Image (cartoon, rainbow, N blue to C red; front, side):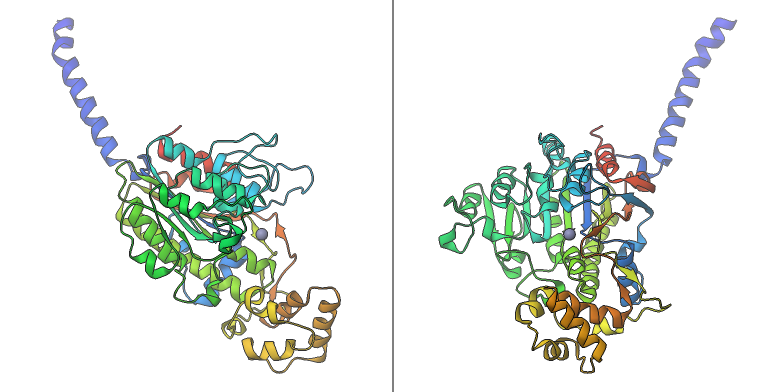
Length: 440
Ligand SMILES: [Zn+2]
């Protein structure tokens, strides 16, 4: 009796169990599934202060505010000298490889040995890859994904290494490290990496219009000799970060195995080094537009994980400062140009009042403000002193002209997004992406 009961019921229970498991797996949230694609967006130097200021300036939520999972990330390097405060190379290496290293290291460990990057893992699994930035493509943040070098400043070597990685889409600035000196480049070895790229099957473009015309294949776009323009200075011949992100997704989407794409808003950091609040806010908003492009793609392609974070905070940027309970971003709206790229190159001790009138409409400098700028010139930081006049009026605070060790935000949407919730270390971003891809 017992035996026949088992004979009849065991298969039925088995079938029921199988049905139950099928139902459970179908009912499971999409986040339990693997990610076919990962889009990692890095706002270089974008801390909580920069985000808050951009939101207030915009007068509406940012796109990155809409992400379902949020957390905060520690950024310190493994470095006995510059304790607790990272540079973009060490922070980028931690994100790209999961390994803490010293400042200036491009995906090498503390003993200068190469460490495999998430982009290299993605390629091993047959995925397409892309790097998009507003800095030189050879600058630390993009470099850590597709190069290995003990020194971030070896950008000629890094250019050759990035090209050798055969990344599907490369968009940014920095043509000077691809071209020899007789072609307005900086390479002293005579190599022309643009021609080399073409021989490898890349389409090469230098303007937004040329980029828009490309609809398939491998693409190398280098839009300036050095960094691309700050958003506040950009003309329409240069693509925006959002346009570059859109083009990269269009091309990477063709790969049936999926893709890994890194997008960097690289000049938020530069603006904060220069204490240029207006340029920082405008570049943060341009970065958020690129986030919007990625988020839209992730909404339409549910197998896509989108992550937004920063490598570190720059400047000790604060909304409010100077002992006052107030922030006055209106003055930032009057800005017509960046301090670093437009005002500083023509600035001297005699014309600073004229330049502030031309680019900010400020014509009523107080004797104290004039004295502060003159003191800045004496200390050879005239441009920062002039920018700080604007920051003081905006009640936007700075604690440093370098980076800080403050935690930075992280936001994620798509499969495995829950991984990026709460307190994380930057090395865990690599672990999360590996897990999301199913490589671990
Ligand atoms: Zn920096």
